[in-house]
Length: 387
Image (cartoon, rainbow, N blue to C red; front, side, top):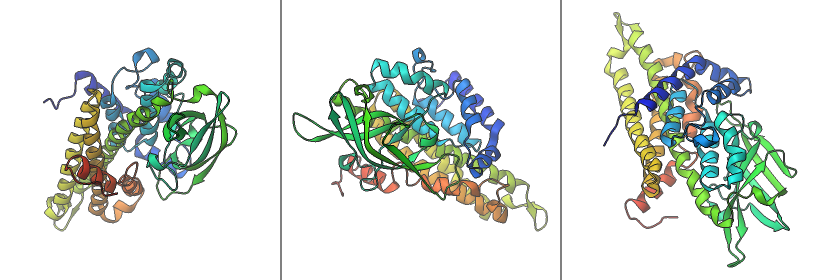
């Protein structure tokens, strides 16, 4: 059992940390409040190779795995720049296309995903079904050689920044008549695809959308993979990277909040000149939050290691646990940091209250803490399914 990063991973962590600090949380907040995007940071991360660390070298990537991409997600978040589209585009879309796409799809999309010139977002969640793909209402049907997609999607991140959206739909199996999942790469400017921005109480440079698909016509090669049989494994291949990288982003956010708060409490003096951090009522909650963040980081490392080793079933359990642990730890860390800073914690200047909405959402999305507990109860503890 080895808890040390390789020299290359250490170098990656240091380099990404430096890039994140070059921009910082002030940049992130300024972009979010202006309704703008973190384009400069994204493009520089792409030029430096950080967006494509998990993409094969033959397509312009770094040839690493989800371990490396989790490092990128965590370090940017630890610098106050948690980029949600890292989870969506390199982690989900690039993994799905690399593992299950056709040769032509890999050649067409992976180089742009690697250098940041292309973004592909992900659309699975629906108003009625949530993320339960067994009950998805978005349907794809054949029309000659083409496909026609009809349905609705909600809480779809970054559609306004992306050239394509990876849509999860259901198709009819001709042999059984049953519906089975399939994934389609859909241009965001396709006729029949409309979007409506959702107003969210989260300070983020990345927007959320409702999508409406009204007989969106797609060519045959928009289907991910060589056949419909690729649909289910393609869908599942993106879920573990999603959970691991969103957990890494949460852990990084927790680290950022604790660093901000502990720096303040170590130097803020009241009542006789002692730092407020010398009081256990202040220090212990921060120490507790730091412990929870570090525990989450260990589970993230385990999940990423299992995933990169191809141990998908074990990675599924560890990835869900990592997501749960990091979501709870990040929310605790930010809330504790705000409390430690007092009134200063609620100001934009001190840069912690600006993350309250995001870390609260991290306990809900992309899978809620309750559904993770259901998963653990069923698959780890052997309990009957409760839903």
